[in-house]
Image 1: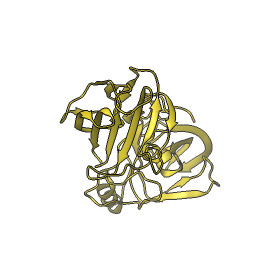
Image 2: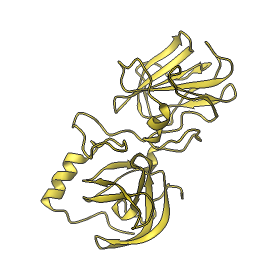
Image 3: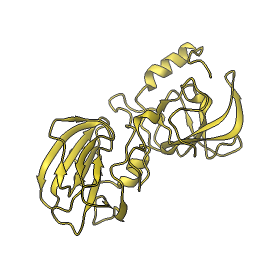
Image 4: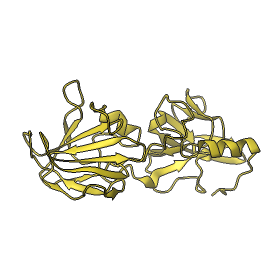
Length: 257
């Protein structure tokens, strides 16, 4: 166990205020984001099934096939902006998330949410069907950069940046594994080893989604010792659990890599 209280310099406090909740979890992005952009949400698996078609120039999303009635879940917290009949889809649902992005769900036979309803990450929103232009029961899932976007982005890296890898199992990638780092100049490494390549350096406290954790090199820093490392998919590497702002050395609710 380790205490949450840590001595911080004035500069550290300024960095904390400036960075809290404002750093997007996209690999290769700047370490700080404009104040108007909230942090990316911790994602949830939209549906279990087999990917039968991926994103390409003629297909704006991914198709996840399964039995009729398979549950469909919201990929993240947000507000429902469309729920009803839609050309091609038969029926659809669109959700605007807190980071400004939009996810889209099509072909369901049953919708369980309505326009202006607030939903949480992983909330049941529909059941899979084959309505509209469809050859069998599946979820057509799209991700858009904003409500004005006309072309969907590739949902695979979009979800990966939020802690979900397709194909996925519902219940994975929940906000319970969302943490915040602390400290400055925190190195993100390609593996849980002190001699592994540094893939990124965090300049200040950063909200992160921890996908899993494993034992690696013992790290002695800031008066703590710990051999547990957290894997952060959005950053493409591992950081010592010393720099995860949680009292436990081994993070609760996070699976082993």
